[in-house]
Length: 501
Image 1 (cartoon, rainbow, N blue to C red):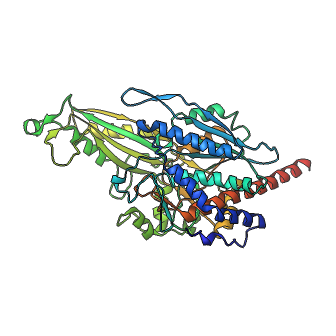
Image 2: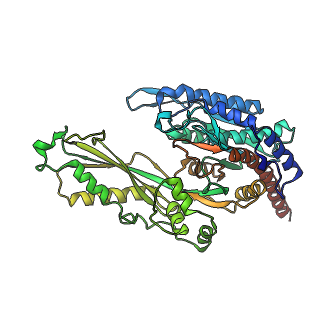
Image 3: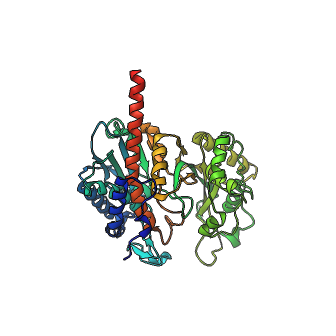
C-alpha cells in the first residue's frame, strides 16, 4: 500500500524535532490504520441495548491501549439505567486515565468516545460498516470519524513520543466514554464528582468530536448551538376511530397538531414564537469579520447535503444562520400511520416532535416558557375540545469559547505547522453538550480541535475519515503538545516576572 507522500515533506515552519515526529508517523501510518480497523470491527453501538457488552469490550480495548502508553487507567462504574420497557441495564464503564505528573508541565485533558451510531449494510452502505475499507484514500467504517479515528489519532500522537524516546512535553489525562451517542448517561454527574479530584490539576481540555467546515481546509471550533427539544401531544380519546364513521364530526388530533406545527416557523425559516430572538447576542464587528474571512463554498455544502437551494444566498448569511442565530426544525409525528399504503383511521393521540437550536445568551427556561405559552395560545384559538400537552424531553445549553486563549493560539500554530495554512475559525450548528458541561463545571479552558472533513458523513451511511486527515491529524495532535507546552511555559515565565517586579 502506498504511503501518504504529501505528509513526508516538512512544512517551512517545522522544527527538527517535529520533522522527526512527522517521519515516524508517515512510516508507521499503516500500523495506525490497522489499529483503527480493529477498533471499527467492534460493534459498539450504544443505541441498541443488546450490544451493551460490545461497548464494554471497546472501552476495555481502549484502556489496554492507554496502559501500553504507560498511563494509569481507571475504569469507573456508572451504575445502571432503565430501558423504555422498564428493564434495568448496566452502563459501560468510563475511562479516567493519566500520564505524567510533572508540576512544571501543563496538564491537558482529552475527551472522546468510542461508542457509535447504529449501522447496517442494507441501510445503504457500500461496504460492511464494521470492516474498515480503504477506497480512493478514504477509510470507510462506522466510527471512523465519529469518534474512534480522532481518539486513536490522539493516542497515536502520544505513542510517537514514547516510541522515539522523547520527553512528553505535557502531562496528559483522558476521559473516554461509551455512551455519548445515547446522551452521555452518567457523565455530567461524574464530572461534578471528580471536579476537585481528577480535574483539579487540569489546565486545558480538548475535544475532537466534530468536523471541519470544508473538505480541504482545517478548522478550529469555538462555539456550538444548544438544543431545546419539545413533544407536542394532542389527544381526543382512548382509541383510534374509523374515518368513515367519525370523519367530519369530530375535532381530529392530527389536524390540531398540524396546525400547531405549521404555526412555529415561516417559509423563510424565521421562528414565529414571540420573544425567541430577544436575547440573541448582537452581531459585533469583530465577529462579522470572522465570517467574511472564512473560505466557505456554498456549492460544495449543497452537494454534501444533497439539496438544491438554501434559504439564504450569501456565505455570510448561511454561516450566521447555522451558527449564531436560532433555528427551529420539525422532526416527526408519533402515533400516525407511517407504513406503505393507507390506513383510514383517525389517530386518537399524536405527538409532534421539534427542536430549537439555541445560541449564546438564550436562556433554556425562558425559551421553554415562551414555546409552551405560544402553543397554548394557538391551540385555544382553535376551540378544540382535545387535550394539549407540551413537554421538554431534553435540552442542552450553547457553548462559546475565547478564541484568544492560549489553547486556541497553540492550536492555530500547530495547524499552520502541519497543514501549512491558518485554520478557519468556525462554530458548529449542532449541539455538543460536553463542551459546555466541562466549561461550566470545571471552569477550565475548553477547545474543540476537529480532524474530520465536512464530507465524512458522521451518523450517516458510508461514514469515513480520509487517510490524509487521520495521519495529518495525528501529526497535528503531536505538534499541539509541543506548542501548548511552549506557550504555557512562556506565560508562566511572564507571570513569575510580573510577580517578582
